[in-house]
Structure formats: structure tokens, C-alpha cells
Image (cartoon, rainbow, N blue to C red; front, side, top):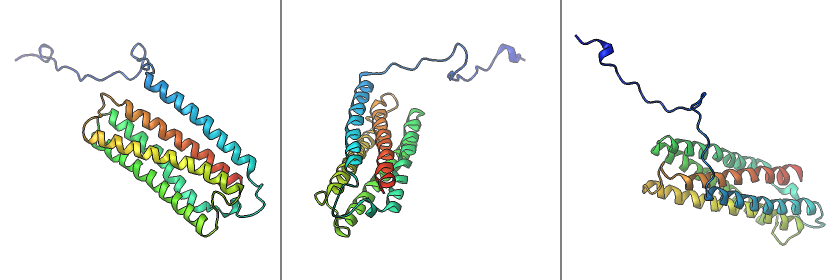
Length: 210
């Protein structure tokens, strides 16, 4: 009878995650990474200009509605949707890297739904402001700065949702996999940035200026 030592069972190959002598350096940034970083820095400057302009002119409207007409409960709901989408897109990115294709689709689709819910909430809010409060972009300085700032952010959210829909279609057609996840990573970076900008916009427009 052969001994166990003469016929050893090969151990499972477990990739090293950390530890002395086994840690792997982070991969260098690719041109796509640097391009996205440059784009996001330009967007920081763009939104900083809009926010400073809003702060400068808020409260200077002599006629028409003021920030008090903004519906805080509605925007809190849409904000929860948008911030939750940062968690779902992170889980989608993580699941794809772990090889969970179906799990990725679920998390990614949830992110799209949450982004669309935010946009629908914004559209409803604007309809109430326009038809009930008679606040338009040309009504007064508050209307001009408010619609410009919140509108450009909504435009960026729309671009993000469209990009995620394109990525989802490519994944379903197996054009994007774990071997080339750069497009998914770049969209994730962009989406996290859009969420971060909204935290500042929400604080300035719906909390501070009221």
C-alpha cells in the first residue's frame, strides 16, 4: 500500500494578497488614467467657477422666488439615490474583477436605475419650480445661477448614465471582460466624481443658501 508521502496531494494555488516578500506594486497609470485625471481636474475648475458664482449672487435678487422655494425633502430623496449609486458601481467594478459577470450586470444596472431616478427627481423638481413657483432661468439672478449650476450637474449625470448604458451593452455582448476593464474603471471614476460634486452642490444650494 502506497504511503501518503509517496503520493502527495498538490496544494491549492492561492494568489498572494500581501505579506513580506509577496506584495505586488500597484500597476502604473496608463495614458487613459492620466487622460481621465486631466479631464476631472478641468471639471473641478469648471464646477468651482459655477459654485463661486452662485455663492456670489445668492440673496441679491430683488424680485421673484428665493432659495426658500426649493423642496428639501424631495432633494434629500434624490441625493440618497445618487450617493447609493456610488456604492453599487463600486460593487459592480469589484464583482467584474472577481469574475462575477452576472453579479456585475446586476450591480451596474442598479447604478443606472439610481442615476435615472435622480434625473427624474430633478425633472419633477424643476417642473414644480417653473409652473408652481414661476421660477425660470431668466426670472432673476437666483434662477439664473441655480438652473446653470444644477443643470450642468444634471447634464453630467445624464452623460454618466448614457456611458453606463453603453458599457452594459458591451459587457452583454462580451466586448468588455476582466481582461480589459479600463473602460469600466474610467466610467466608475467619472461617476464617483459626479457624486462628489453633488455633495458640494447640495450643501451650498439646498442647505447653506436657505
